[in-house]
Each structure stands twice: as C-alpha cells, then as structure tokens.
Amino acid sequence: MFTNTLKTFTLLAGLGGLLVAIGGLIGGQSGLLIGLLLGVGVVGFSYWNSHKLALRAARASVVTEAQAPELYRMVASLAQRAGLPMPTVAVSPSDQPNAFATGRNPEHAVVCVTQGLWQNMPRDEIEGVLAHELMHVRHRDILIGSVAAAIGTAISALANMAMFSAMFGGRDDDNNPIGALLVAMLAPLAAGLMQMAVSRSREFDADRGAAELLGTGEPLARALQRIEVLAKRRPMAVNPNQAYAWIHNPLSEMPRRRGGPDMARLFSTHPATDERIARLRAMRISGAAD
Image (cartoon, rainbow, N blue to C red):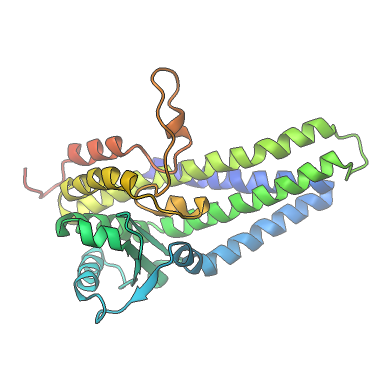
C-alpha cells in the first residue's frame, strides 16, 4: 500500500509541475505564476465541489432510508464495520451495473450505485462493490482522484492556450515556436497518462481493503467478473474526466493487441479486470475461512 501511495503523490506532483511548466511556456515568469495560481484554484474548486460534479455527470439523485431501505441499511452496516461515518447514498438511473464514491473527506462522502447494479447483481456481490467504494472513502482516494481530474482538465485548457500562442506568435522571445507547439500538443497526453496511473494505483488498494473488511475477496471478484460482461452490453455516457471514479470503466475500453506492448492497459483508468480478480482470489486473509 505504501508503494501505491508514494506513486500516487509522485504522479500528482508531476501533474502540478506540468501545469506550472505550461504556464511558463505561455507567459514566461508571469506564466509560471499563472500556472501555479490556476493549479491552486482548480484544486480548491474540486475540493469543495467534486461530489456535485460527479453526481451531475451520473445524473444521480440522493436517496433516503425511506426511499431505498435495503440499500441504505447495507451501506450503513458496512460503514459501521469500516469505522466510517454514514455516507450520503445516491442512485444513478443507468442500466449499466456500476458504482462510485465521491466527496472531499469521509465526513462528506457520497456512495452512488446504478439501477443496473442494484437490479441485476446478487446481494453479496453488491456488498463487495459497496465495500470497495467505502475503502476509497477511507483512503481519501475520492479527493485524490478529483484533484487529479481537475488538474488534468486545467492542463488541457492551458495547452490549448499555449498552442494558439505558438501558432500566432504570442511571445516575442527566443523560444522555438515549433517546440512550444509540440509541448502544447503532448502535454494533455502526458497529463492523461499520469491521471490514469493515479487511478489505477488506487484500485488495487481499495480491492484489498474491501476483501479484508468482508473477510474474503470472492464476492468482489465475482462482482467484477459479472460487471465486466454486463458493462459491455450496456454502455454508459459519462464525461471521460469522471470515468476514473467508477469501480469499472463505464466507457468502451481499447481492444488489446496480441504481441507488443499492451497499450490498452497503458491508456486505461482501471487495472485489467482479470488481474484484479486474480489478486482478490489469491489473497489469504487472517481469520477468513479457507
């Protein structure tokens, strides 16, 4: 877990540095300050508003215990076992079985499931999914992911500004406009790769935490296996910047190529499902039944 945490903060630092560097590309010394201030601004905005953006993207509605008693009690029981405050519960109308957690900290967390998950999955598998999402809450991954997404969006916006600046001679100095143009084009790609790596590094920890909370990784393994099949049949339209938050990538994933580097995994917001399942089933948890 320490390795994944170190990797996460290294990648976040890289995203922040890239944001500042693009600011410098646009406006020199003053641009560096602009990039820094923009980074602080987007982090602050995402800190306070990440849950609103995520729920809006999923077209989700908050539900009360009276509206969804079984779901509410399941979340409450798992939160109590995990030593977490009771999160807000929300439901998305999507037919794709999926779920996510959002919010700035455990005291202001939201756990959201889709109608497809609740209506098509066995209850023990839903419990495995909810345990996974609550581990994201405990590890504060929901804040880390939203900050990474916000910085990535800001990098893309600054890169567009840098591209126009290079094309139309926005800066009168010795900088190479071709080099500036290349940086502006490649920066969003680099930011996207780093953001995806941040997301992937947190999923394994959440899987492990869920298995430890339940005493077994089997319910979550079976849930991931079922979601992998059903998600391909029931596509979901979500903002790509929000895809990292879901337990399974809600967007169509790149097909794998035989031979050569696995580009699908490099450009994925989530680890490969088969690898997650294999890790869960290989876990031996103290006190769990063999």
